Length: 97
Image (cartoon, rainbow, N blue to C red; front, side):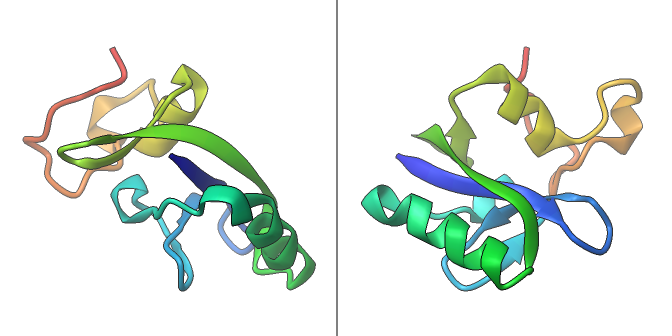
């Protein structure tokens, strides 16, 4: 599974490609397969997102899970304060560690 991530131009927040736009939640990300690089290039050229790039992910019960630890951390928000973690459901598990 391949998904696209980048940063929102206005806020700097980490965002994930949903197939129609960008979301703060990795669970909304869609598998873009072989068209991943084209999506990233088009979105960057349109200046809708900063520095988009393609990452590998695996499907989990909660949606896509980034394969690399760096992107797992990016998907959850700051690591220095757990209360600032970006989760739709605060009782959901933490797949980073």
